[in-house]
Image (cartoon, rainbow, N blue to C red; front, side, top):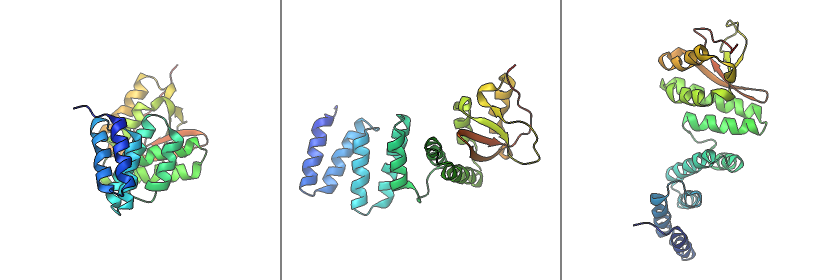
Length: 204
């Protein structure tokens, strides 16, 4: 049966007026069962679990809220949620990288670099590069490919300037764990640093 979101929100608020927190949580969750990305309910459940001292559950819902806000490009709200509730608590590497991009957009380059570096270290420690590379390939037009180490002498290449062979070289990183070195940020651009085992070329 379809949930009437408006009625359920009113019901949850009435529970809160009576300090029936667990009933309010259950009501908000009924909305989320119908509409998993409902921001107001995600925020409410996270806040209520925080009030109950159930930090792990609260962090889960704050994380989902952050992801939802990023998906809908509500950058300022997403950054505020991360800064207030998620920063300092271990997060998935992909979420940390998303936060780094938000910081970069706010010209907070030093903080962005820290997030990108922590995200890359976490992925490398877990032996997982594929999720990060999925993100790289999806956003390649916005990124810059650089050498990861000083002895790699080739000019940075904008993702939008890669030819077909260059894009293929990046995509094949999935099969080479050593190829993913770290995420960094430079100036006002989002930069991905990749270990270069083969050359990448610009479009003619």
